[in-house]
Amino acid sequence: MSEKPEQKKGWFQRLTSGLARSSQQMTEQVTGAFTKKPLDQEQLDQLEEMLIEADLGPQIAARIADAFGKARFGKSSTDLEVKEALADLVAAELTDREGTFDPLSGPKPYVVLFIGVNGSGKTTTLGKIASDLTLNKKAKVLIAAGDTFRAAAVEQLKVWADRAGADFMFRPAGADAAALAYEAVERAKAEGHDVVLIDTAGRLQNKQGLMDELLKIIRVLKKIDPDAPHETLLVLDATVGRNALAQEKIFGNQVGVSGIVMTKLDGTARGGVLVPVARASDSPIKLIGVGEGVDDLQPFDARAFSRSLVGLED
Image 1 (cartoon, one colour):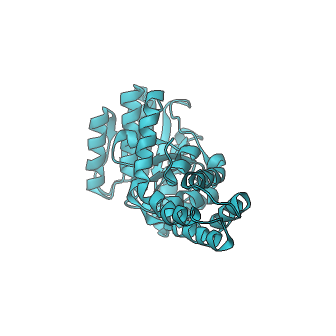
Image 2 (tube, one colour):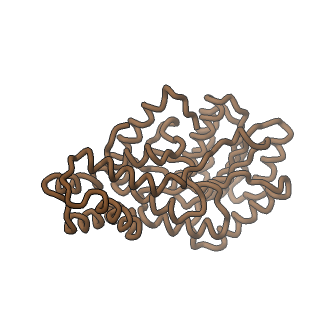
Image 3 (cartoon, one colour):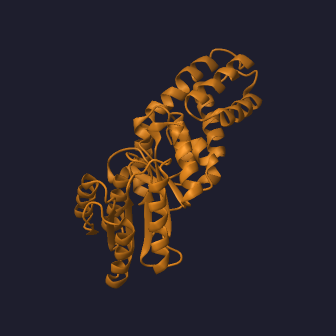
């Protein structure tokens, strides 16, 4: 996505605003308790419990609380000191989990497959990426509506394609999604597209028949290019909390995921779930979303996320 310097401050403000519910959940009671007296074991236990409630998970919560205690035990702290320390510790969990999404740096056409459960935000994420590529980077993009089960998904994607000025392909309901994906890449090669964005039907991670269909799409793409899809982005909805961990595990084990997109961070008080997902996954976090606008989907930045999560300004 676009990372123009003049946009960074605005993006950080949107990120902080989007994560406001999570930051309030994480820090309101913690900072209030920690600034009244020197840090003791009771407060550390309280901190660990609150980090777990924010969906960071027991292991990460324990590590952060332990490190926080070693740095601050027996000391009185200001509200800012508490937040700064927490932000640094969360960032330490995430720095090596940053990934880069740059579809214009690879082969052409660069094939991106979007996967995830129903309602995760796949179609919207694809549309935002298409808009960024066409409007900001002047790329030639082809969108393939691979969700052949739901007419509404095709219609939604067509709106995004029209908005972005991207080319669009779809087939009648019930058509073979793998055949559509194959035709889309062949068309992109013939017409000189830079990027092919392929939507897929939302599927529950425990429905093997649907997972098999997804694997068929990947096999068919590899007949055209052994390296395709060049990106397989798993889109996860932050509002589902720790269920996102189960989704990542199943999709990651069966399909192979090159990167994770975490959406709807502005719609939950438990945005901390990104941390255990990042730690558990073999795939990096590449993009995060904190709103409906095109510019509300941006590259994942561990430091910016961590500071926003605890309510700090950049």
